[in-house]
Length: 224
Image 1: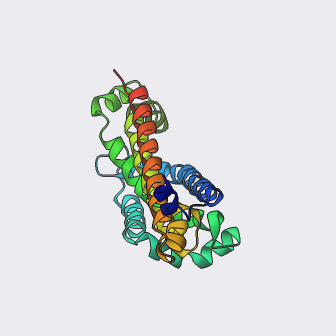
Image 2: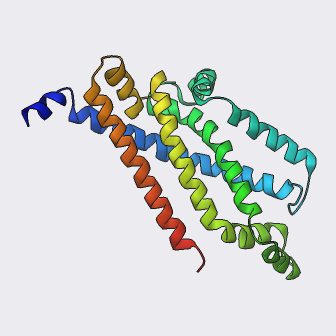
Protein backbone atom coordinates (compact mmCIF):
# COMPACT_ATOMS: atom_id res chain seq x y z
CA UNK A 1 0.00 0.00 0.00
CA UNK A 2 2.86 2.34 0.86
CA UNK A 3 4.54 1.55 -2.46
CA UNK A 4 1.33 2.32 -4.35
CA UNK A 5 0.93 5.63 -2.51
CA UNK A 6 4.52 6.52 -3.34
CA UNK A 7 4.04 5.70 -7.03
CA UNK A 8 0.99 8.01 -7.26
CA UNK A 9 2.65 10.77 -5.24
CA UNK A 10 2.22 13.39 -7.98
CA UNK A 11 -1.52 12.88 -8.47
CA UNK A 12 -3.54 16.02 -7.76
CA UNK A 13 -7.25 15.18 -7.64
CA UNK A 14 -8.35 18.71 -8.45
CA UNK A 15 -6.04 18.96 -11.49
CA UNK A 16 -7.24 15.59 -12.77
CA UNK A 17 -10.88 16.64 -12.33
CA UNK A 18 -10.27 20.00 -14.03
CA UNK A 19 -8.47 18.40 -16.98
CA UNK A 20 -11.20 15.77 -17.39
CA UNK A 21 -13.91 18.45 -17.31
CA UNK A 22 -12.03 20.46 -19.95
CA UNK A 23 -11.71 17.42 -22.20
CA UNK A 24 -15.41 16.64 -21.84
CA UNK A 25 -16.27 20.27 -22.57
CA UNK A 26 -14.13 20.32 -25.71
CA UNK A 27 -15.54 17.03 -26.98
CA UNK A 28 -19.17 17.95 -26.28
CA UNK A 29 -19.00 21.46 -27.71
CA UNK A 30 -17.05 20.54 -30.82
CA UNK A 31 -19.18 17.42 -31.46
CA UNK A 32 -22.42 19.43 -31.52
CA UNK A 33 -20.96 22.02 -33.89
CA UNK A 34 -19.32 19.34 -36.05
CA UNK A 35 -22.68 17.61 -36.49
CA UNK A 36 -24.45 20.90 -37.26
CA UNK A 37 -21.88 21.62 -39.99
CA UNK A 38 -21.05 18.11 -41.15
CA UNK A 39 -24.64 16.87 -41.53
CA UNK A 40 -25.67 19.45 -44.18
CA UNK A 41 -22.31 19.05 -45.91
CA UNK A 42 -22.75 15.27 -45.99
CA UNK A 43 -26.29 15.61 -47.29
CA UNK A 44 -24.99 17.95 -50.00
CA UNK A 45 -22.33 15.43 -51.00
CA UNK A 46 -24.88 12.62 -51.14
CA UNK A 47 -27.54 14.58 -53.04
CA UNK A 48 -25.17 16.04 -55.65
CA UNK A 49 -23.14 12.85 -56.13
CA UNK A 50 -23.26 10.72 -59.24
CA UNK A 51 -26.08 8.52 -57.91
CA UNK A 52 -27.72 11.22 -55.79
CA UNK A 53 -31.16 12.80 -56.01
CA UNK A 54 -29.84 15.80 -57.96
CA UNK A 55 -26.45 14.96 -59.48
CA UNK A 56 -24.34 18.08 -59.94
CA UNK A 57 -20.66 17.40 -60.72
CA UNK A 58 -19.64 21.03 -60.13
CA UNK A 59 -21.16 21.41 -56.66
CA UNK A 60 -20.09 17.92 -55.67
CA UNK A 61 -16.55 18.60 -56.87
CA UNK A 62 -16.31 21.83 -54.84
CA UNK A 63 -17.71 20.25 -51.67
CA UNK A 64 -15.56 17.16 -52.07
CA UNK A 65 -12.42 19.24 -52.63
CA UNK A 66 -13.00 21.34 -49.50
CA UNK A 67 -13.70 18.27 -47.38
CA UNK A 68 -10.67 16.42 -48.72
CA UNK A 69 -8.34 19.38 -48.14
CA UNK A 70 -9.45 19.82 -44.53
CA UNK A 71 -9.23 16.09 -43.85
CA UNK A 72 -5.74 15.84 -45.31
CA UNK A 73 -4.14 18.38 -42.93
CA UNK A 74 -2.78 16.77 -39.73
CA UNK A 75 -4.73 18.14 -36.78
CA UNK A 76 -1.77 19.68 -34.91
CA UNK A 77 -0.76 21.58 -38.05
CA UNK A 78 -4.37 22.63 -38.64
CA UNK A 79 -4.56 23.88 -35.05
CA UNK A 80 -1.47 26.06 -35.55
CA UNK A 81 -2.58 27.34 -38.96
CA UNK A 82 -5.92 28.44 -37.51
CA UNK A 83 -4.49 30.39 -34.56
CA UNK A 84 -5.14 33.83 -36.17
CA UNK A 85 -8.67 32.78 -37.17
CA UNK A 86 -9.33 31.29 -33.73
CA UNK A 87 -8.20 34.46 -31.98
CA UNK A 88 -10.45 36.58 -34.21
CA UNK A 89 -13.43 34.31 -33.50
CA UNK A 90 -13.15 33.60 -29.76
CA UNK A 91 -10.46 36.01 -28.58
CA UNK A 92 -7.86 33.38 -27.64
CA UNK A 93 -6.08 30.34 -29.02
CA UNK A 94 -5.63 28.74 -25.59
CA UNK A 95 -7.87 26.68 -23.34
CA UNK A 96 -11.22 25.14 -24.18
CA UNK A 97 -12.48 28.17 -26.12
CA UNK A 98 -9.36 28.29 -28.24
CA UNK A 99 -9.60 24.59 -29.06
CA UNK A 100 -13.21 24.54 -30.29
CA UNK A 101 -12.75 26.16 -33.76
CA UNK A 102 -9.88 23.89 -34.92
CA UNK A 103 -11.60 20.85 -33.40
CA UNK A 104 -14.77 21.63 -35.35
CA UNK A 105 -12.90 22.31 -38.57
CA UNK A 106 -11.02 19.05 -38.15
CA UNK A 107 -14.03 16.89 -37.26
CA UNK A 108 -16.83 18.35 -39.41
CA UNK A 109 -15.35 17.17 -42.75
CA UNK A 110 -14.73 13.75 -41.21
CA UNK A 111 -18.37 13.51 -40.12
CA UNK A 112 -19.55 14.82 -43.51
CA UNK A 113 -17.94 11.85 -45.26
CA UNK A 114 -19.55 9.47 -42.77
CA UNK A 115 -22.93 11.08 -43.47
CA UNK A 116 -22.40 10.72 -47.21
CA UNK A 117 -21.53 7.04 -46.78
CA UNK A 118 -24.54 6.42 -44.51
CA UNK A 119 -26.97 8.01 -46.96
CA UNK A 120 -25.54 6.04 -49.87
CA UNK A 121 -26.32 2.81 -48.02
CA UNK A 122 -30.06 3.56 -47.90
CA UNK A 123 -32.03 1.10 -50.01
CA UNK A 124 -32.92 2.71 -53.36
CA UNK A 125 -36.38 1.13 -53.21
CA UNK A 126 -37.22 3.34 -50.23
CA UNK A 127 -36.30 6.45 -52.20
CA UNK A 128 -38.17 5.27 -55.29
CA UNK A 129 -41.29 4.52 -53.24
CA UNK A 130 -41.17 8.01 -51.73
CA UNK A 131 -40.72 9.57 -55.16
CA UNK A 132 -43.68 7.57 -56.48
CA UNK A 133 -45.82 9.20 -53.80
CA UNK A 134 -44.94 12.61 -55.22
CA UNK A 135 -42.59 13.69 -52.45
CA UNK A 136 -40.34 16.68 -53.04
CA UNK A 137 -36.56 16.43 -52.74
CA UNK A 138 -36.68 18.02 -49.28
CA UNK A 139 -39.34 15.53 -48.15
CA UNK A 140 -37.32 12.61 -49.50
CA UNK A 141 -34.27 13.77 -47.54
CA UNK A 142 -36.07 14.40 -44.24
CA UNK A 143 -38.70 11.65 -44.36
CA UNK A 144 -36.88 8.84 -46.14
CA UNK A 145 -33.10 9.23 -46.32
CA UNK A 146 -32.34 10.54 -42.84
CA UNK A 147 -34.76 8.27 -40.91
CA UNK A 148 -33.51 5.19 -42.76
CA UNK A 149 -29.88 6.16 -42.20
CA UNK A 150 -30.35 7.17 -38.54
CA UNK A 151 -28.54 4.17 -36.99
CA UNK A 152 -25.57 4.67 -39.34
CA UNK A 153 -25.57 8.39 -38.61
CA UNK A 154 -25.46 7.68 -34.88
CA UNK A 155 -22.60 5.26 -35.43
CA UNK A 156 -20.83 7.97 -37.42
CA UNK A 157 -21.37 10.50 -34.63
CA UNK A 158 -19.88 8.00 -32.18
CA UNK A 159 -16.79 7.53 -34.34
CA UNK A 160 -16.48 11.31 -34.65
CA UNK A 161 -16.76 11.77 -30.87
CA UNK A 162 -13.98 9.22 -30.32
CA UNK A 163 -11.83 10.95 -32.95
CA UNK A 164 -12.41 14.23 -31.10
CA UNK A 165 -11.04 12.68 -27.90
CA UNK A 166 -7.81 12.00 -29.79
CA UNK A 167 -7.84 15.51 -31.25
CA UNK A 168 -8.22 17.06 -27.80
CA UNK A 169 -5.21 15.07 -26.60
CA UNK A 170 -3.17 16.42 -29.51
CA UNK A 171 -4.50 19.93 -28.90
CA UNK A 172 -3.10 19.71 -25.38
CA UNK A 173 0.39 19.81 -26.90
CA UNK A 174 -0.25 23.39 -28.07
CA UNK A 175 -1.96 24.71 -24.96
CA UNK A 176 -5.58 23.68 -25.34
CA UNK A 177 -5.85 22.22 -21.84
CA UNK A 178 -7.54 18.98 -20.91
CA UNK A 179 -6.06 15.56 -20.30
CA UNK A 180 -3.63 15.89 -23.21
CA UNK A 181 -2.16 19.05 -21.74
CA UNK A 182 -1.84 17.38 -18.34
CA UNK A 183 -0.09 14.38 -19.84
CA UNK A 184 2.38 16.56 -21.75
CA UNK A 185 3.19 19.13 -19.04
CA UNK A 186 3.44 16.73 -16.12
CA UNK A 187 3.68 13.21 -17.50
CA UNK A 188 6.19 13.93 -20.27
CA UNK A 189 8.02 17.18 -19.48
CA UNK A 190 8.34 16.50 -15.73
CA UNK A 191 8.70 12.72 -16.07
CA UNK A 192 5.74 12.05 -13.75
CA UNK A 193 4.82 8.56 -14.87
CA UNK A 194 1.88 8.35 -12.47
CA UNK A 195 0.21 11.38 -14.05
CA UNK A 196 0.76 9.98 -17.53
CA UNK A 197 -0.72 6.64 -16.51
CA UNK A 198 -3.81 8.19 -14.92
CA UNK A 199 -4.50 10.45 -17.93
CA UNK A 200 -4.14 7.51 -20.34
CA UNK A 201 -6.53 5.40 -18.24
CA UNK A 202 -9.07 8.26 -18.13
CA UNK A 203 -8.89 8.71 -21.90
CA UNK A 204 -9.44 4.97 -22.39
CA UNK A 205 -12.42 5.05 -20.02
CA UNK A 206 -13.85 8.06 -21.86
CA UNK A 207 -13.51 6.36 -25.24
CA UNK A 208 -15.08 3.16 -23.93
CA UNK A 209 -17.95 5.12 -22.43
CA UNK A 210 -18.60 6.95 -25.70
CA UNK A 211 -18.48 3.71 -27.68
CA UNK A 212 -20.90 1.96 -25.33
CA UNK A 213 -23.31 4.90 -25.39
CA UNK A 214 -23.12 5.06 -29.18
CA UNK A 215 -23.68 1.32 -29.56
CA UNK A 216 -26.70 1.54 -27.25
CA UNK A 217 -28.22 4.35 -29.33
CA UNK A 218 -27.59 2.49 -32.58
CA UNK A 219 -29.27 -0.63 -31.18
CA UNK A 220 -32.17 1.45 -29.83
CA UNK A 221 -32.96 3.09 -33.17
CA UNK A 222 -32.14 0.22 -35.51
CA UNK A 223 -35.16 -1.22 -37.23
CA UNK A 224 -35.89 -4.78 -36.13
